Image 1: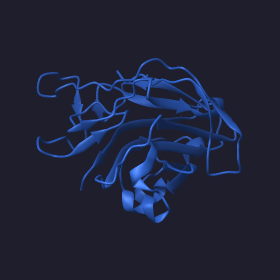
Image 2 (image 1 turned 120 degrees about the vertical axis):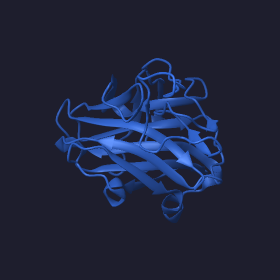
Image 3 (image 1 turned 30 degrees about the horizontal axis):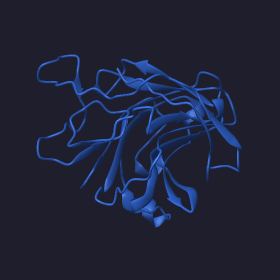
Length: 220
């Protein structure tokens, strides 16, 4: 089961709305994705695009499947931050891979945000595509953006509308493949990434929900 973590105060930078001020992240406990084997554990789902030995696949949290590389959330140098009390996370058995997905629950504010953050920047220039699976039919997740942050003097963020990559607010799972070239076209510098995954949504009612699962990078 994936459990997410971190407590800090950090400016939410270049979000999809005017500066919301400081972001306060709530402690959710340790997060280390599992490595369950679907060949030996029937409770482990392989995902829509199962990992094959010899492939390059990077996990950064929100993923339990096979991978060649992993940067686990350890709550020391890598964290999952929940922005400004806008969201909570709960485990869910409604999943597409592993044993659990994460249920993103809206706090009913004017916006929502969360992200995977690293204390030190990392070079992701050898990776080509960000994959993530999302599912919701609630109005608070009618508009969703996925972003990546980089350090260029100060933290900067590039965020993309996931509707362009196949997401629909229709209650079905949508398996997105977002080329990192689309982030770099927006100014992202892949050699100094400080956050490999940010999720932003607009205003919503309390308890509006979105399922998040199957987050990884590939070299293709």
